[in-house]
Image (cartoon, rainbow, N blue to C red; front, side, top):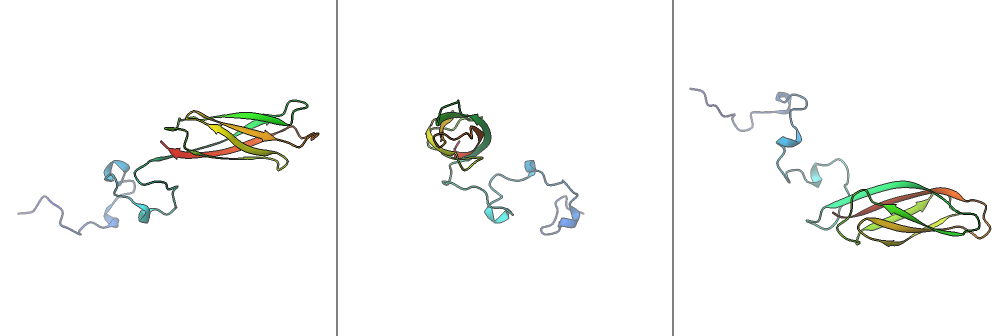
Length: 130
């Protein structure tokens, strides 16, 4: 009489059809860092992370050397303790995070007095707890 169970160590990769192993067949927490071919963003153990990023255009009003840009977050963070890093498309501009809350960050951008360079792009990335 033949057993209905597959014997241990009798299934090899050649026996699996392409796409046969899907996420629904992988047990929770069975894949760890040793199984990945890239280094993911890591944070505090048992605290899931969320990463968001974007690019926003900005224009200085005539005669102004400082503006604030609101960076809306597509998905809110659990509190204001996330990290936001910003930079501008032209090194003449200087950007810095003024404040942040769960829904948005406020970035101040400055340009040298008398500069005729009035427009650019703000690149940003934010990462923190979900």
